[in-house]
Image 1: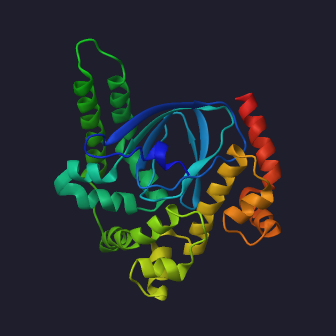
Image 2 (image 1 turned 90 degrees about the vertical axis):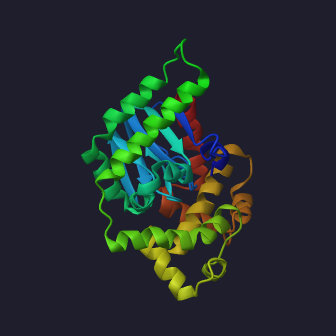
Amino acid sequence: MKPDFFDLKLNAALPFQISMLSCGPFHVPRVPDIHQAIHLAMVLEGDISGLLGTRQFNFSAGDCYLTGLWEIHGSRSSRNGYRLLLITVNPEEVGRFLFTTKDKFIALLALPAPQRQELLKASGIARKLVAVLSTLQPKNDASLFARMEKRWLCIGDIFLALVENLTIPPELKASGECLIRLVPAIQLIVRNTRKISAPEAAAACNLSLSRFQHLWGGYFGIGFAAYERQHRFALAVEDLLLSHRTIKEIAAARGFCDENHFVKLFKAAYQTTPGRYRKLSKSDDSQA
């Protein structure tokens, strides 16, 4: 997980971050992320296969995507490499910017990933993202503050366009309210490296176990145990890539029963063993 990079302690003074990312071809899935900050991105060149929640999407030049609140997401592969405009924003600050349409914004983020992507296509957001690109060009006649303000207005305009014509059915509004009730469980997951049980998470939300599991599955589309395990897998993958720990040490540190159990689950999730994943990742990085 990379909360220090992607959340960037975004606040009222710094509500967004704009990044230009580029990468060569790769075939080993990258470490997935889970965080409060949301991403709005456009593929400028090349292609990328990515995970949003429980669904995999394939994006090519001109395509855009938007992550949801606390949604598992990450890049899986790229045949030709890519260049990407990535806007990371603090959702609370976007909500304040939108003011009267804040409820619609929360509902937008609560949409299942496929519906969210369809809305991006129908709204022609790519054209507005090009306007953000133009603000990245340095201008001698504008102060840094003026440039940052212009960028923030462009970003706000994009979200305003997305929610403008969005109608909120009762079930979608309930979904947004549901997420608010589940936030304590999410925070419990991301603030710990140990295994978190469903009863423990339910207690953090002041919900019965059955009610908690019903709300969780309804919002995220997967059970709590699968989501929580995905978080620990992400931490384990970071260990594989960034540390010299053995597979046995990583399995123990990330709350898996034993090395064999970890390897079995890892193969099911990544279609390869942890050792092979580590070797392939180093190969991908050396060729990038």
